[in-house]
Length: 251
Length: 251
Image (cartoon, rainbow over the protein chains, first blue to last red):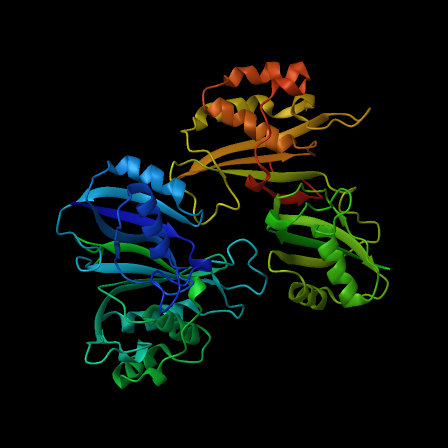
């Protein structure tokens, strides 16, 4: 078997997520496996670095899979991009060592949450940004972000804790920046719990609105109770930007 | 009557243009007039700075109209943005002098043609960029652009000359820039003929591919014959960026 490492971008708007729950074929994984099967005649099983939720996008999701009959990566990439729908695109494809696994070998990820912070409508990027018309205090959000960085039990920020599984994670960096009317929250960590980025983003937005103080983040973390953090922001503002396998920048 | 100046952005993907030809209500003008009529109860007729073709976008189309019963611009803008579809948005609205007319008073416009110059798919902005995977020589395109600037008879670049109407126009500036995988062509002029920007963009792309020399632009202009220029590029890469009423930057 020849193992591959594939980097894929997708507009998640019309999909039930990377891997759906229950009876749905409308998933990104199913589309990619379908295209691989059509191309190779093999029943290929792909492994992503993680499952993105319904409506979440990716600029650099990483996927591993193996083929019994190897095809040169350039050829395979070109053919895949012809077979995949327009809202999915292979950005890179390479041979990978036999034991490479996109989920098990990942050492970190960067997610970006984009906010359109303007009372006027977001005509061009509305599928990729969450509209929050009220002014946001980006400096306060940055102060709050500092307190969330580091190794913590993020149970308060976990949508669905799994029985006996650890909710301790390390966030290496949370960037809070404004460019014109866009506020961008960039989270780099060793891993993220169910809905964690969207709940962190929602809590930071409440800090930006003055509904919470930056200092209160310490208490929210210490509570280890989901009810202490804010609600999750909508999926469409979230993009999985990059997955790391060797080292993490600024970690 | 109270006159207004309105600036509107739209994603033109699903419309038959600003003002359709023949039997269609699927136009941007019809949507705007419909929303104004619902809000005011008046049969409002709007005048745009110009008609954008089917599939062309705008970041700053300007429109004038008058109301018998004035409404404060802030209130009217807020209500309009609630009534308009998500792919249309009012960016600015002000009272205007009684004789202001968005088309007759315009002294210049900037159009932008965006090209995705990469063999990989354009997953996120594919509705707003024309994909041209072959490498483009941006320096040669810039040289060609210099020869197209100034006052010329642009008949070779006019899709549908109108009987006895002048095809002389002045282009103040054509910016050719590359940012990563995007090549951006920015045309500022006193007015543009039917399909002129898309035909200019198509001809510059052929220069970028090495199919024409930059110097040949002089002959194409002199020919005054449509068959000497390239075909028009697709509508979806084109955006009307700004309309000028007082002075034109760098003109």
